[in-house]
Image 1 (tube, each protein chain N blue to C red):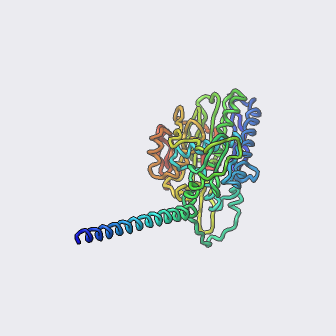
Image 2 (image 1 turned 180 degrees about the vertical axis):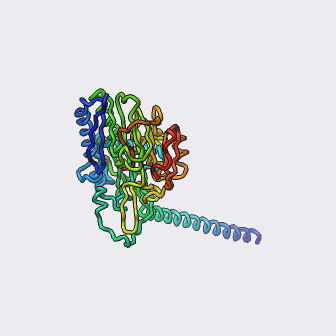
Image 3 (image 1 turned 90 degrees about the vertical axis):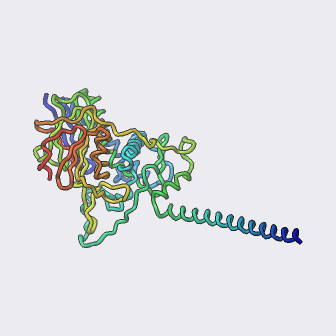
Length: 313
Length: 101
């Protein structure tokens, strides 16, 4: 049976929806739109009316969260613990300090003289342990800014894929900027995915092709979502230990997991952990492909070997 | 004569012990003050420390929640769940691309 697909833009990135039954595409799209709208209202850091923005403007005081926000923050705290704090939701202040305080297109439009020296303070973030979530009430310390970028998009993909699959009864793939979740019965041979540095790369561009039949797959990279701040070239993967863009030996990491949230958390954690991340992923049984800064590739935990050299360097 | 010397010696000893006790109390008090000052400074200088120190003083809940807030996850938190099956090699035309965004 032929698949059907639709792509559009949201949150400054590309969304792609695939279904195994073309007649169910509209139904699946409605499910996806509902999840995107709900997640945007809850967790969009750049929307002043989102729950996250309201929480951040009243940090230090108890905040009654919606079930979706509480669920997403719960995932963020869970993956923070599971990654030994490498993926931490309290990096919002560090991102703002680095200039990433609005949509990426606007950040890049800012005019900075390359010769302008910028001094960034190296300081650990407050840390996920300072965030309290109980019975739907969130407490953050005064001044702490939460960012759910490492969780919300992937969680939206998980929820949308499950919701669309339940609504349509067919196979569904949801990609939110390369964070991929699948649900329902997969197409024959599985969902074929091109692994690349940038999710905007076409399926004919260089990369490795793999298939998945369930769960999630995500790629994190320091080569995209970059911007200049004076004489500094920064990216969005923040090391919680320094509060600055991570200086990783890896430039791109792809991970497959039971959910897109866990895949994305593991990929981002690997960038932050740097040397030793391959062993950490293997120890947790998370299949992954890691690209070093010089383009050399490594695979762990059953990720297919092959077509991994010379394509992405 | 002998008793007089003994009493004088005892008074000197008591006086010395009292002086040591006083100095010990002053040292402990100064230590407490210094530690409190250092903690207050660290709370302002380090965001993580500030956050930790302020957590127990969180204002009372405005919702129906009562008692001390507790973290949703413990340190073991549950690990990241591996996939049911690892990805397999593919040779057909890909449906979609996964990359950084």
